[in-house]
Image: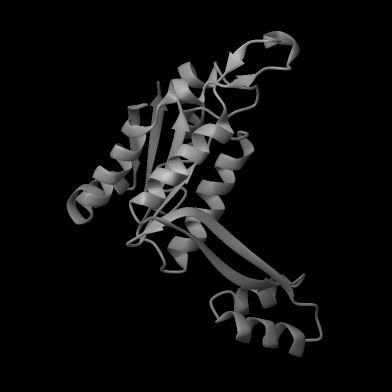
Length: 203
């Protein structure tokens, strides 16, 4: 696999190159090490591509997970409590989880446990590998990375996406770099308010 394109949002790439150059090297190595053709194992059941052998998102995710894990990147989860009252959410948002729950229950409302999970985190850098449906990318960028950044758990987020040339050889509905880059830029230069590096990959 190779990195074809990348986009730096709010100087995300520049931050990596200056402050975490070793991590940027590791991200590039993970992509380089993935044998894309070995992951071309999914036999399509879709009408338009019936019987065609496609790239498997599951296989590619598995290989990247093993490679990131080998470099010491780990999954990260952050738990919190939510409720139906907007004012109470604003009041408790930045409290420790136990205090959130206590405040919500003291107000006579139901405290609902929730969490944000990121695939790979190391030294305050988070990376999501997204070979899934296009709707997941917006959640990654505007919820996951943002939540970890606002919570002062990361300094920059990364998103690895297939280029259109790879996505066209996958099942339908998968997000692709060019489309998600358009969606990101359409939001304006400061949205989301978290430094990001969007990486487009292909065989």
